[in-house]
Length: 236
Image (cartoon, rainbow, N blue to C red):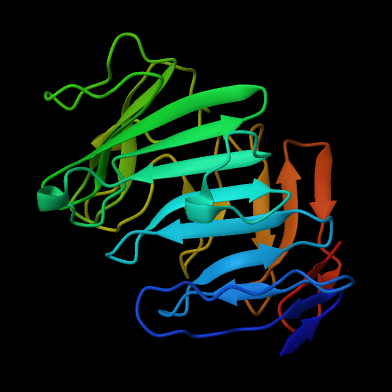
């Protein structure tokens, strides 16, 4: 048994495919584990239960948040209900192909496609991705991605506005240094200025241990970092 704050966790491992179930007792928050050690149920301090169901390949297929445990995670009135799809059984290589997101007042499905080396190529919301692996015209949100030889990703196309600091072509990366272009670095590789993040001559300053010390946006706004404490936590 592990206690952390108001959370008590108990683990039960059962043979075969039978799920490890634990009763939710008065005053106790209990997690149940699958036989392969994945969390099956977690009772939260607010009285809700987070439950996950798996397929025979041990991949999570449903994750839900509701008031009680449900057989096969079935409950249309959940506070949150996520359904994960990995495609046809003969083509399932572990890549998530779509997920259905359901809340009491919201419902949407996101779709994903990948390139030849299993990197995310297209992400679409509201419309399935065609065989051409490009954004469908009817999607409410969609992005197409590209990669350079270091594996850095940029957004090749978006039907929504992108932040100005978002890389949008291979030209946004330096081909020899694995760094962003139009960005300033110090001798050790720390980012010291980015026009879209520190405009107007702003800068980012580090201490002798290369920990962030000062963030200055423009000439008049500076955010000092007082110091760091054990564990790497930052003080301001």
